[in-house]
Image (cartoon, rainbow, N blue to C red; front, side, top):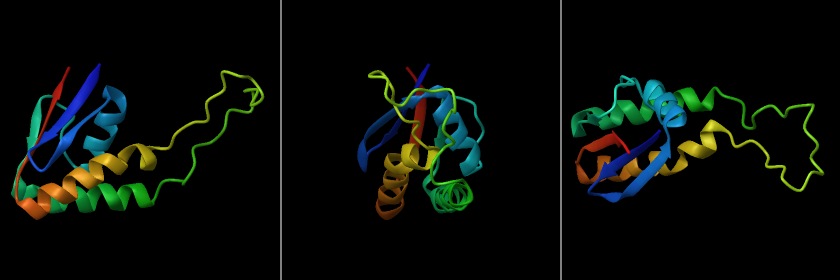
Length: 105
C-alpha cells in the first residue's frame, strides 16, 4: 500500500504505507488512513516528529549476512532520511497556515 500526503503549499509526497504510518505515529496522529492534520495541529505534529526522529540512530543497523559487494545490494535508508520531504511539507504548511491530508493509493 502507498500513502500520499497532500498539501496546497507543497508537492504531493508518496511513501510506502509502513513508513508513512510510522511517521504518522511519531507525529501523534492516528494510523488510520485517510486523515488530515489541521493547520492548528501542524506545529505540534512537526515538533513531535522532529523530537522522536532525533532519538533514533542516524543510520539503521546493517544486516551482517548481507554481501555489500553484491551488485544488487542497496544500503538501508533510515526513517529520518525518509522523513525529510514530509518535514519540509509540514514546515511549508505551517508557514502558509494550511492543512495536510493523507490518503492511500
